[in-house]
Length: 273
Image 1 (cartoon, rainbow, N blue to C red):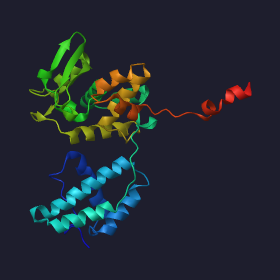
Image 2 (image 1 turned 90 degrees about the vertical axis):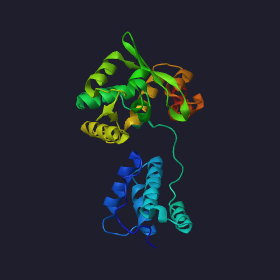
Image 3 (image 1 turned 60 degrees about the vertical axis):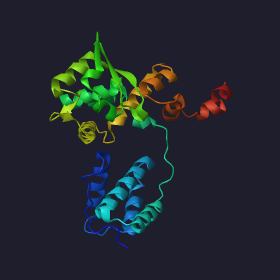
Image 4 (image 1 turned 60 degrees about the horizontal axis):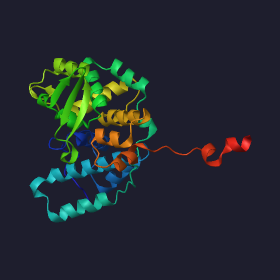
């Protein structure tokens, strides 16, 4: 059974985060047909090196791209068949906690900024200081920002689940972004339009590669800021509010994942004294 009539899947109408996933699959596929067995073989290879959450995103991207090859001609029977094929590709349950190796140390953060170009470095600083989701930073309007001394108060009005909150930038970062990007409406603009997520992903991936961290993406800076704030002693409810989580329990699930050591559990030091 062939799922698509072409081995080059469309990406034009896909969300930015899906495009590279589909392109990677097309590159791997080569001249082979898109069949259930090739889909399964692809994910068997990926599961050796990728996290479950990444694999599930790639599944969603491929499924959407394959459906788009049929467009409005996709029948109910074909959609059911497509659903059945991807249901058989099981990836397991994603780990919710942000792992320690995903967090940048302060040395890595400084190296990332130092090795990136001026424009990318300013974006890195903004994502870290504000701990915003990339979509929140990109939708931030200049009119939402108020300079107060050496800090800038930024109102996130279009956050996840329509939640509003205030985040902060240093005045230095804010003025640098204004100077480099010359936005008229948004803080970050490209060709007089709101900058795309894809552009930011590409910039950060390049900057990360320069310091040997090819796993860096916009959310890495959000994770890093949250972890740094908690380690610095900020309360869980305060960090949760800054991140825009609806409940501190969500923050705890992602960031409070210290594991007990054998020494702590067994009291080895006590036994040895």
